Amino acid sequence: MKNALTAALAVSLAGCGLLEAEAESKNLCVHQTNMADVVAAPAGSVSLALPFDLVLDMGAAVPDLDEEGVELDIRPSAITLGSASGDVDFSGVEALTLVVQPPTNRADLTPAEFRYQRPTPVPTSVRELAAVPVQPVDLAEYLEGDALRLRASFAGQAPQRDWTATLELCSASKVTVNYWDRITD
Amino acid sequence: MHVAALVAALLSAAEPAQSGALAAPPAAEEPPRSAPAEATPKKDAPDKLLGIQLSLGVPDGFGASAIVRPLPWVRVDGGLAYNVLSLGLQGGVTVMPWTGRVTPTLRLGMGQFFESDVRDEVGSFPDALDPALRNFGYRFYTAQLGLELGDENGMQFFVRGGLAWVRSDLDSTTFVEGDTTVTAEDSDLSATVPSIQLGLLWHIW
Image (cartoon, rainbow over all chains, first blue to last red; front, top):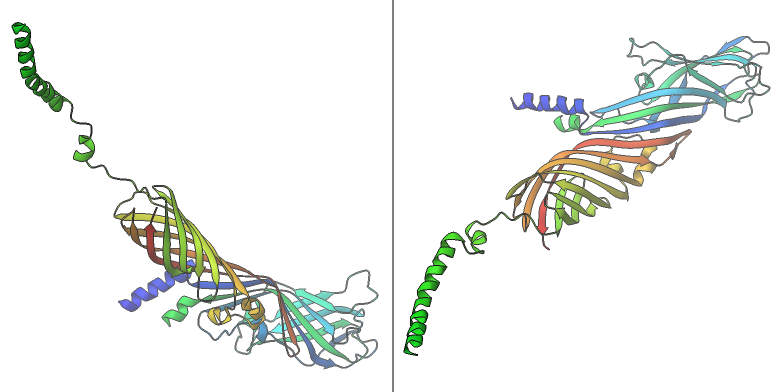
């Protein structure tokens, strides 16, 4: 009887948002330098897919999701690819596709796609490529540990020099901690 | 002469009787003016204007306030609060639909705690918010129903319960860890929690 009453009270309190704390950032950006060294693309190339995953470490931006009662929501606005030196010219890139891979244990999730399309008229110099989500997505579901894995592919002429990739993910993020779940567990 | 003296004597002898006779009807017909107050005690409305309040509760912590009762059915309080982490200010308005030895109350309160380090208290939030949680101040609003027990013109014990809303706007933060920099802008922290408060009221003046 006592457990039933406790459970009923927990459900009602959780439903009403009692004993709950929430931290929200409308603009949370994770910028990682020295992600990967990328070799120069051959001249005249029309497409290039990077043969490795870009791993974005989100550790400082996410709570410990193994703790009871903790929920996370990450709604991305853009993922921006750049170079560590800041002087690599991406103006030859017609399109960039970044695909966030679901965790290996989440076969129910489809990869989340982000796209950059070169504007017209073609700019003379482009130092970074900002890809926006193709459709709304909660990237919290795509975390594997504290990291996101991305695949990048270029359409058009990728940089014709060796460069070191940087990545920046900007999003609206919300962390909710339900203290009742902790008390009752 | 003898007749005049006799009449005077008769008159003086008759006066007590007349007085008594005259007095008796007023006593019967017009009760003394002081009688109503003595015979039928009237219920005194609370009439002390000022006092102090000491309290202990969540989320307002320890409180010491001055109270003012401009009307018998409403009381205003304001003073200091201490939540173990920092000092703050708090105040409120209490409405009492009726007064007596047991008085129901509705209190709306609010307060502000000055900045302190709350990282160990809130826990579970991303490291990127640590700089903001290191200097964290918050405001709170409460709505409570309660009971006050005791002498409404003297000392009363109270217990209140309800809801509290806690809000804080967090400073923009930049957190660097290895090759990763996390910036958080336009952030806030909020919580909805039950609110409980116990304490004493002392109506003094």
